[in-house]
Image 1 (cartoon, rainbow, N blue to C red):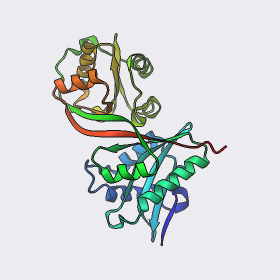
Image 2 (image 1 turned 45 degrees about the vertical axis):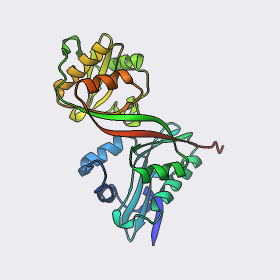
Image 3 (image 1 turned 180 degrees about the vertical axis):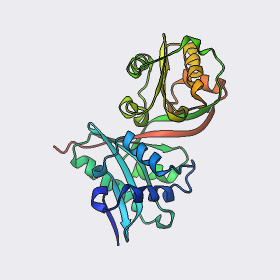
Image 4 (image 1 turned 60 degrees about the horizontal axis):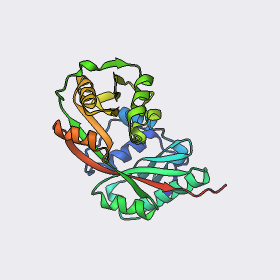
Length: 266
């Protein structure tokens, strides 16, 4: 018999959750097969909350999951999935409802997630659960920008994060938020008109500047650590998106950020 329980109540470990994730994402539109250490590091950096997360367990095997993070009065869906052989049984809906009820009971104000454009079944489920689109997000890959990076210098995380906050016109999504990335190995570049924060694998977590040339120089400076990936750039940021396209960046994913407002049960 299938049980829907919180992660601590399930009796399984992160290894079993990792195996379920690999199986559930084996046919995903984006190749996503992290090794165990990468999987655990991603959960940890994004604030994985075992008590807020739910799994479907059948005969001791995890067949579905909603991995949830908690920060202040907000919750965030790190990732969800169901093993291929167990789809079509309503498990995703039951897991989502369990996670939402737990968030309500804990006094959370909102629940956030992202869904890839074209993943119609997932978007349909999230809308059924009450989530609404808040904004559109683009993801880019960029090789070897050519502008002159000499106007940028490496600086400490706090200084660069403050510069970005000063010039940015939008808030980064959960996975790129300052609270998420602050404990990770990062390289921070400062320009007198802005800054950029780059993580492992050339992932640009945050970037902002007051003019186009400064943005171009920051991208060039960031590229000194390798090819760049920018995940969840707000589509409405026409300056940054246009620059990336002019530099030959490949927009490989479009996502929607979705939000569920939770009732105050106190």
